[in-house]
Length: 178
Image 1: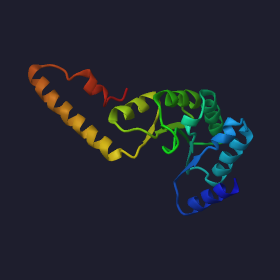
Image 2: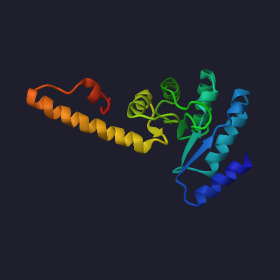
Image 3: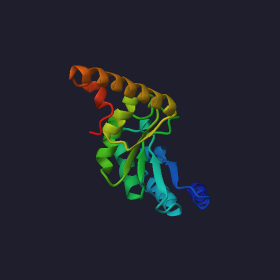
Image 4: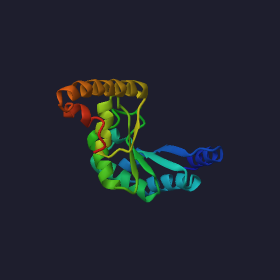
């Protein structure tokens, strides 16, 4: 993969602090694991730490077994993140795939859920599944939705304070860290 590794080296030389690469999922599906590993390792070599390397799996194109293989290969090749999707090839992130990815990489590699995430509740679900980052083209909408929810919680909390009651758990759950 000389062209991609050259692009990575150029990006790093220009000051890039993070790189995203798409795992060669057709090679993964063909069980050519050595080539998949070599591609990722070549990028990692051209983009050493502290540059953050995110490997996009395109989980919508993969079976569960292939997602596990992609996570393990990415982990072995030195990826900092495994990422669900580019958002351009299938439905994107799913709760089950994010949870599976996190269960495979543990704490040694982080998970980024990306593609198809449109609401605050979807963001929260992905984080509960194990994602540490969210990729979305709906960021402004999601932040406006979050602000509205906070305003609603604040209003309800003010009303319930007067009645000495707690806000509904469904409202507070959205913003809890657990």
